[in-house]
Image (cartoon, rainbow, N blue to C red; front, side, top):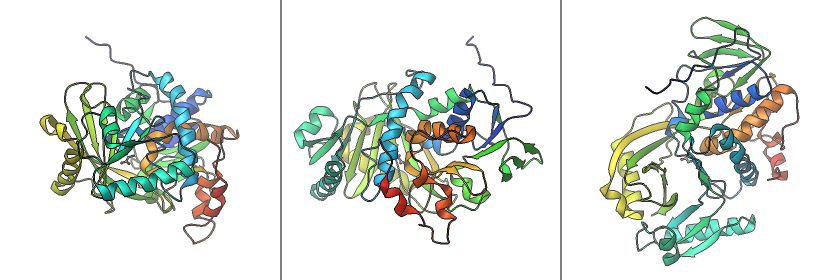
Length: 381
Ligand code: GLY
């Protein structure tokens, strides 16, 4: 019989309480442990939120958008933090793969959109290869013959987020409860406990805005899991298909994750016929060979989004440490967020300048965009 790993011991008097057991909270807790501090994570169901839905694209370049240079800089730095993090957890255990990513345009209008992104890549000096239709199909033979062109990015990688969470849960103690009130050094839970510590970290994802005064909203993503022969799809592919975005991320065991919708309708995690239809319509237009393999799961998660699409990482004016609002890049930015949180908890300087991501940018005035101009100085990748 396979050996069941022992659950990590819950400390009686933790130094640090992390509220939220998604990949951000668990990574932060693990990194805090590396400094020798006693930590516990509070979450009624750790790892079952956005981290469970996520495809695991570690894609600073294919997630780059005009006007978001500061997020791009963070995401590039985040990408560099992944190899060491994956080494600690086990590269094979978390299926961390550095085989690049292909973005493909389905029709002429989609090609125009892709060319526009190509201009952004060029302006930012990002290492990408612009590909003609035939070159796209040489890299990924499963692509439809009509694909108009693409962009290959060797710096975009992938990981299996569910496996990352499982590895972290083997290392970090958790308590199955929700926080109802938090201060810098105290948490009240929904089962009536009052827990004291030296530092509270809030990593509550889409639920942050319900706990504290921050403008975080849930952005629903529906996702599908297909299963086919190993190696059927060689590369993660992000497509623009008749103006819509779709992606397919292959795992080494033959699973292919297809995502994701972007829906702003509150705390709704229903999987809908329309959502599944749109994902299948677009992915099969781009990769018709996937129509023969099994559809094994449909799912929906809630990304936490701030008004400026940037994460919230830093110490608030309430002295709580925040790590939330990671929107489309929570898996990519988990290790660098964890390093920053551990530094803040210990009073060290974080390794890069996180000031553009401070929670106080939403508290300095009633203007939800207050402080954003500061970020354009950027952080170094
Ligand atoms: N990072 C992909 C997504 O949020 O759908």
